[in-house]
Image 1 (cartoon, rainbow, N blue to C red):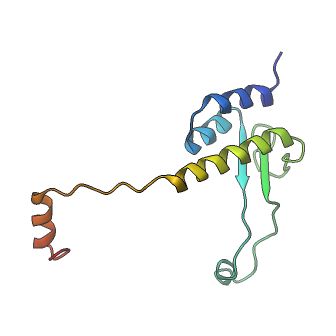
Image 2 (tube, rainbow, N blue to C red):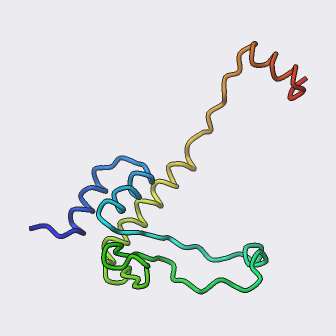
Amino acid sequence: METLNQLFLKAVELIPTGLTLIIFILLIVGLRFILNKKYTEEDLSFFEYPPPETGPVELYELKGDPREELNIADNRAVLVNQLIRTIEDLYSQARKRKPLKPEIDEDLKEQLRALGYIK
């Protein structure tokens, strides 16, 4: 019988792209994955007191730990590494894409001129 990790890894391999879909699958199997980044000085200036230190990755099993008190990322290293690689691939693909240029027809241009957005 396959473990939850094996089933999830198979599901991730079948998904062509889509961070939203990955998050959705994690929720279905009862996991919450958080990929943290370091706070910048600008981020920290927002807080009166600095936020608590967290590890770079957090993974919680929501059914048994609904308050997210026990980070199981170290125990599920294969799954965490696969998730990180998938997310990095998604961001890499997104950076390579050229932004779509919106098509603006004459009616829309007229409306924008009337509102003073364009000359």
